[in-house]
Every structure is written in structure tokens, then in C-alpha cells.
Length: 142
Image 1: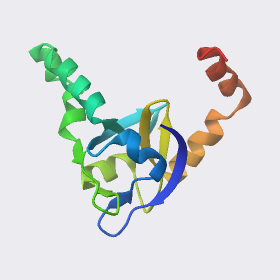
Image 2: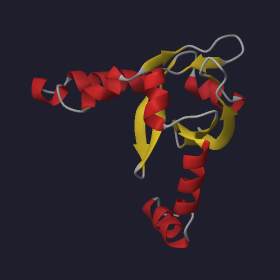
Image 3: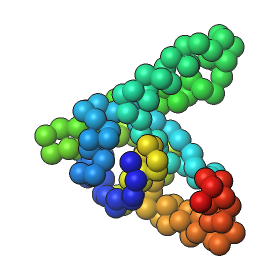
Image 4: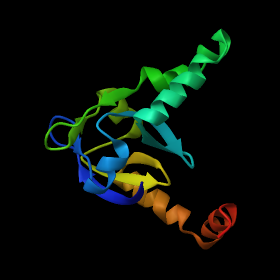
């Protein structure tokens, strides 16, 4: 999953799955709260990624399960797009990420996220500063 795709929430809080992400996300995927570089966004997980997270969560101690990791599951929604490839988001998720009508769906090396369009624009400017870009390129050895 790579690229960024501008999108709009419809009146029923649905988003359209971009064609280039449909196969990678699969017939069922999960959306929950997330963060990237200190910015709130929503993370999308394929069925396999979600299953892995569930296994790791279930392996935690009771004390660890009662901590913040459980919030990721409490806020999650299971998404099965309709025939027009639309999926719904809960009001909890919309509120958390500050999503209004204009959003951006971003793919990033096997991951995907949903950002408020204005928040993503600010993040993009910040991330493309020469020093931050150089640090990112060095981190992945390019």
C-alpha cells in the first residue's frame, strides 16, 4: 500500500475505498485509532494484520490488557465495503481523528491510514523539511 488518495466523507460517514488499495485491504479490514509523528489519524489493518494484533494482545498479562492497548480494540470497527466500495466509520473514530468532510487515505509500506485533509497537509509540510526527509531516508538506508 502506497500513495495518498483524497476522499470525502458522505452524509452517512462513509468513505470510498481507493481502487489501488482494494486488493491490499481485502474484503474485510479494520479501522481504529492511531497516530503518526504526533498527529492523530486512523489506522487501517488487513484481516491478517488484525489477527496478529489480536494474538499479541491476548498474549499480554491481565495488567497489560487493562492498559491503553485495549483502547485500540475498543474503538475499532470491522469494515466490509458495500458494492460501491464504501465503508462506514463510527462517530468515535471521526471525533478522535478530527475527521471532517475532506480526508486523505494514505498507504505506507503495507500500512494505510486515514487523515483529516488539513492535518495531513500540515504533516506533509513538516515531514518534507530537508532535515526530516534526510533522517527518514537514512533510517531506511536510501
